[in-house]
Image (cartoon, rainbow, N blue to C red; front, side, top):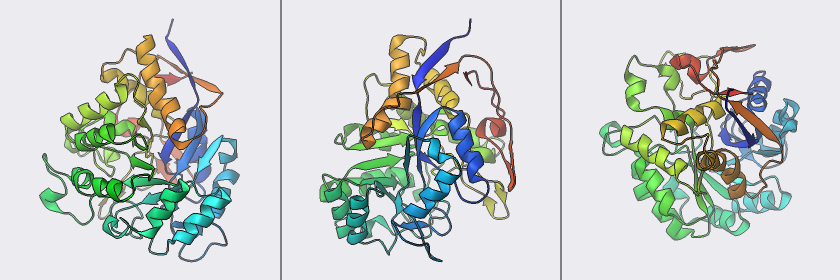
Length: 365
């Protein structure tokens, strides 16, 4: 008889639902994999850079983007968080008013031109010690960080001993904590041993999300055959980095690391200038996480292994953001499963397992 894991429904605390006709498909895939809620990234076009009020040619509001998502099926979620995209137009007053309204629960930092639709980002040096971060600190607003150092290139950007991420976690993150010791921070989609070690030793109000692909793969998998469906930002790293991430999530009793898939659908993955960044894991993330933790050495059929998996996937994230674990459950069954290409009005979206030729050995029951 196949092993079945019954778990509380989980929260994807970093994902992309995009915009347009396909939003409903991406939300449906999340609901189908037992997701009780999501934190939906604001790097739309234009960005979600206002809290309330009418949309403009240069910015959408959290209020209006939430409405789009709710009408596309997200009203089924228990929780839906839309962060405010931090731009040069962000003010302390916006933070104060947003916090008072209840609409603003998190803000998103993008390094300029560091990933998809991040051209509106402002270098981190301009935020540290400033009034916007002080307002966030005072009102309990979470800072969600894409943690890569701005404007690096060549070996400074990516090398075996140094990457844009490791530089950010040695240069910028300590300065943020020194200047804003009470600012609640989520280090999103961490990929390096440097980041994992930093979060592990940081105060309790600093946590991190980790994606399935960064727990499963290394840069060797990416470049052998140029498997562009694995290309994301930050890119997958080296074996020592993957080992550190696996150790962090499988450590018994850890409460700082939790699920955030960074699921990022593209209908045109291969582009004229290279490759669009993002792995689509809608519909299959819990299965991939289960496989990754087993590869890390956890026995998910043991009480200790199941509890570590449940903490990472289902309970740590809600606890960090201050809402309860879901009262509903979903189940994973140990049996082979595959993912099909998602056919949509706007074109096909290839899930990561399909793009990598991966047969999963867990399925949504």
